[in-house]
Length: 310
Image 1 (cartoon, one colour):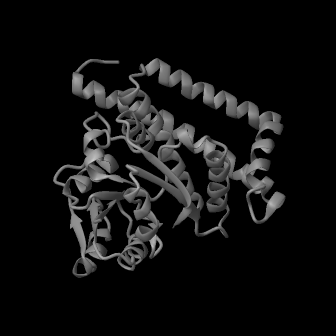
Image 2 (tube, one colour; image 1 turned 30 degrees about the horizontal axis):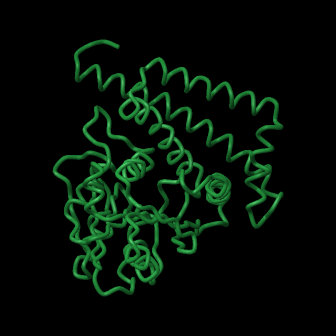
Image 3 (cartoon, helix red, strand yellow; image 1 turned 120 degrees about the vertical axis):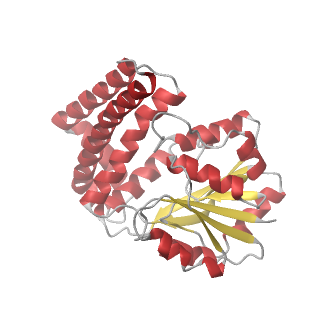
């Protein structure tokens, strides 16, 4: 079985080399690595250095964000199964050896476990612990995406690939939509948490703010373009979220309760409750800023396309 690894990149000069080193070290006879790059930094030059080791670099003629980059990589892929990878995610050498039995037994897409590498950093540790609580508390039948996601290429195309063609490219939240489309086709899902991939989570305040704000930006995009919400519905939801978080902050107990659950997943235990409260506050603030920024951007972009004032 041939695999294709598709890595969309945008200004990943600090992450991409370590990722490529992990990918070319995989022990499997037949696989390819495709990097679809939209960067304005040194990322393409770094990728070029690995072309002789089988890494293929694609520079899109038209920028359509992460979704468009993933789609282009899937279309160009030659493998029966595609692995969709972020630029900061690292696969173990035996990844395909672990994955192959599931596809040989009829799986159409496979979800695996993901672990943060840089647990010494507060924000990275918070991301890992919050993810554990939110992931493991959910029924597997409702989980449609993980780091190290893979699926049969023909089904990815049949499912319509990742959503593109909107006034603003969707930057977050499209993953679950794609998985849901696969499930709607009757695709057979396998969740194997014994297969572990690792990734680097944001460490600095600036990086953490940027990443969490990006997740907030994705929410109005999904609501508007995929779920067909009105501007007023999106704005109301964003305002209610702000009110809820302010109440949680003012009353303290709900916020502390959430962070207490997260801290129980940390190696530092309850010592992380107060630091996690700080990370939670920043997360909620950045997410809300992202939501309102994104809604304004959507309104302006659609006004420009239609010529009609919202």
